[in-house]
Amino acid sequence: MVRGVMGFHAVLQNQWTRAQVESLVGAGRVDDLSRRLCSRMSFGTAGLRAPMGAGFNRINDLTVIQSTQGLYSYLCRYFADFSSRGVVVGFDTRGQEESGCSSHRWLAKLTAAVLLSRDVPVHLFSSFVPTPYVPYAVKKLRAAAGVMITASHNPKEDNGYKVYWCNGAQIASPHDKEILRCIEEQLEPWSASCWDVGLVDRCSLRTDPLTQINSCYMDELASLCFHRDLNSSSPLKFVHSSFHGVGHAFVQQAFRVFGFPPPIAVPEQKDPDPNFSSVRCPNPEEGESVLELSLLLAERENARVVLATDPDADRLAVAEKCGWKVFTGNEMAALLGWWMFFTWKENHPEPADAQSIYMLATTVSSKILQAFARIEGFHFEETLPGFKWIGNRIHELSKTGSRVIFSFEESIGFLCGDTVLDKDGVSSAAVVAEMAAYLHNKNLSLIQQLHNIYQTYGYHVSKTSYVVCNDPPTIQRIFSRIRNFDGSGSYPKTCGGVQIVHVRDVTTGYDSSQPDLRSVLPVSRSSHMITFTLKNGVVATLRTSGTEPKIKYYTEFCAAPGQRSAPRFCLSETYKQTAKSS
Image 1: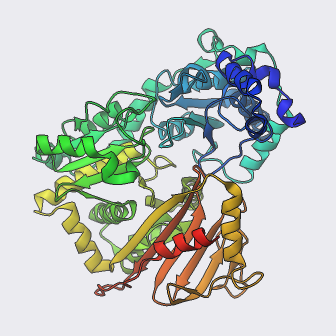
Image 2: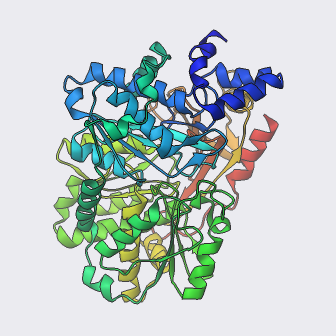
């Protein structure tokens, strides 16, 4: 308990979290206190993310101060010019009354206060912004790092601390581990100044980048617009929901950049609401069940396409009127990948030019971009799950003169172009609108074009879902059983009666398809991920989420061009049975 008690008196500076601790102590809830005070958060695929409230494994005033002190210490060691470059700080609209934690009023201002107390310039946005604005600002302002206070699409109880490196991509190893080590080195707040949010208003080292960054972002967004005249005359109508988050005003601006009138906003969801009052969960990836208000409004307004950004506007869900088809992330990536290459070819007609461009996807996402690349002659690469891997790979490729024109992850995270090194729901919404308008002018719907794509490049049939598991030991047992299925170190040999021909386990670094049995993808011991390749062409992956208590599974059958039949069994049930029996 010693580690947890360090800084305990600091927790009590917040009257709301103090009340939580006192209530737990009074009720004798020792186990709950131990969980809160005897473990700490670690960086996942989207930084630090946890419920708000009292405790060292939760997001609160103290843990944000500790995280920022560790970030400051590491940046001081890494950058000789840190004191002139500074840090970008942004925030979303989350907040929790019972813990006194809000993204802006406390957490973002506390982040800034720690840095300002050490004479570090802070570019703190004066109002909430989409998450992509922070990495964009880091590059534009040449800052040493960026911090975004957000939990994206997580439940309302959660918040997070997302860190970007100087290249504009999320931090990856070794920076994440080194920052955590620096946090551990000094858990006590340096001084009373760390708690002084008034520094934000008094200190001349604090600047507000909102106007400059918003203007530059919208100017550069225009580079993704190819048919503005067609957009301005299109009869298509769009509905947009911002899911009670930050996206409303920014998507409206993006539409104007592309020549469209603003999309019709879902009135119940356009304004910020940290309780996400009109949805059972603030994740548009859940599909039709959380898009009900959007679809009803679209019916009333005779709108053809529904666009929904998640609360921090880095993800985008899309639905089209045809009995209302809600596209999966993989399906929308097929459309956006086709569109980005199609518009690129309009300006680069020579086939040899394709050798200089790339598309990227996470390894659990559809292989449809790989099929494009084989036929069209450009490059395709896979990364580990999480846009931090994509963002850093885009940065590496840019140093060689190569350009990435599209990237995605199956969980409705898309990036058109390479201006931002993270998924971006704002720009993606405008690009989808232009693509839909162009196709409508050709008497095609998005659904019809998706089938055209499959006929050209091969049908890609996928099933992606998850099971919730709040008990880490159970998760450990499930994956241990898979790794020792028929004895120690023996993986399953069949699945659904079909032979498994290859197994890749990036947690251990094993890959049976490689001559040296080593995974080509980097080893990632912080989470579980095992991929099975079956004899019938199905590829299936089982992994733990980096942001939520979920075990996720991904299956896909990739047909050759012209082939339309797919295996008739679904691996999701096999995975569920495996989890249940474990």
